[in-house]
Image (cartoon, rainbow, N blue to C red):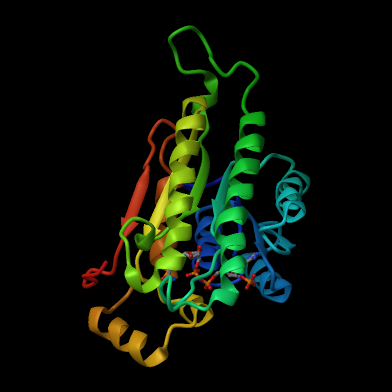
Length: 265
Ligand SMILES: NC(=O)c1ccc[n+]([C@@H]2O[C@H](COP(=O)([O-])OP(=O)(O)OC[C@H]3O[C@@H](n4cnc5c(N)ncnc54)[C@H](OP(=O)(O)O)[C@@H]3O)[C@@H](O)[C@H]2O)c1
């Protein structure tokens, strides 16, 4: 594996399992360092130990809380002596069912994590990444400033059901539609300053997501068998690593990934 992410420092929310965990491994494998967050502290500690000394810092806590978000950025600076230059907005959860059939008692928590938490992390990322730019962001008249020599990234994990309406998971899908809209708006706002905002839109990825969402094992398992093999967290992690390893002037905007045999949505 090449050192294509050497020197990069990435904050990853929701790194105790699935895509976030796989991404932490992928970034470190490519020479980068990570600040990892999730609520299950013991999982983060075990992952940090596997990643090796000096490569990972753990910030356990609820990613929807501003104090956790502030601690992520402060920890990056403290541990590595430099500001983070990639922020992966990944923490989230699914919810089985539609507007009429999903468990309404879980709506608030899902919106808080998937939408408000993502929005707070995006806002802080924009603020901190803009602050970390060189003092003369415009450079010489008509030319890109020196800031464009180093990539800076906000990567937002959306979903295929945040792009295509699925009546079967419409409450969850609506949180991802909202997050896609925020990501595109943020891209238009801070892209001109040299900060990339990338939306990753995976379809079905086998992870803890399905059990947390409460998908019926029989029905959903049969669907996954029919369209499988489905995506694995490593597949998404590899894609994100590729996107953030591009030269600073190359911006992969929205990346949709589906299992090859998935026909819907
Ligand atoms: N799997 C799929 O089919 C799929 C498809 C499209 C998009 N996605 C999206 O991909 C992202 C990652 O999902 P995944 O498949 O990797 O699922 P996962 O294995 O369940 O991982 C979710 C991660 O988010 C963390 N998390 C949840 N709520 C949190 C909170 N309030 N604060 C901090 N961390 C929190 C979980 O850790 P703790 O429980 O330890 O906090 C866990 O590390 C999510 O945004 C999901 O919506 C998934």
